[in-house]
Image 1 (cartoon, helix red, strand yellow):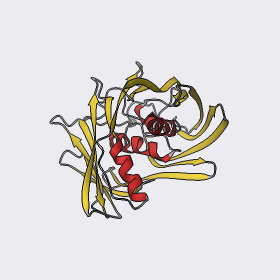
Image 2 (cartoon, rainbow, N blue to C red):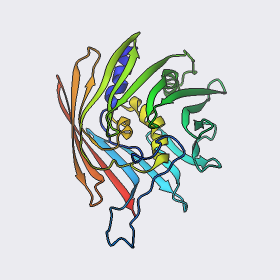
Image 3 (cartoon, rainbow, N blue to C red):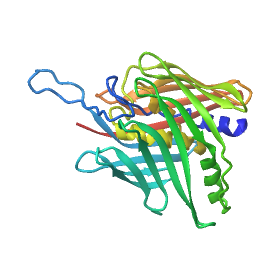
Length: 301
């Protein structure tokens, strides 16, 4: 179990995504916006909506794209696990992402009575048994609306592998509780997990820039990445854990099966509105150094 989970954690040490502004409840009903005041005589930075996020590792490319409707809502997501169409509830909060390949497969976002996200679910149709399976991940938020605890459902990972190899889905009721800690600037500083009955440090972010995350100010993308950020642990290349940060991580450590740190360093190129356009990432472990590159494109208004 520890080997599986550590592999997943290591795979999430590479990207940069984000959350809301300081004053917003991150996973609640609040929304954020940033506009210029034509009467102030001062031009402020534009708000940029992420359109595409691409990562290249050893010649292999992974890409996420986001399409927006006339209301400025995300209506389509193209991801490493497929293409999805977004649905919204009466409060204009995202409620589902439905697979364009098979509508029986979809991601559901569950809110409490106050509109705060409490659970993500993946409903997966098994073509072998002709049954649908629900894999739920439960969240606990802190007073700032940030994810404090996350019950990560490993059965979902097992189910995906089963489908890849044409095997029937078997539910083993396996999960790992994760705990997140933050600094006073709303940046994620550590992730702990209960692995084989022991609390272990899995990820440690020690340094950040003072610029905007690629996804900053977009609550819908934040919610989507609560799901995708943990799912892409599977991928082995894409890291979406940093969407928990307000700024961009520049130095981090990930801990391997023996508790030894893998060093990760980031450097960025920014656009005039202080959003990253390129991230150069170096991952160093006892076997050597791996370099990766990420690019981001936006619509800035």
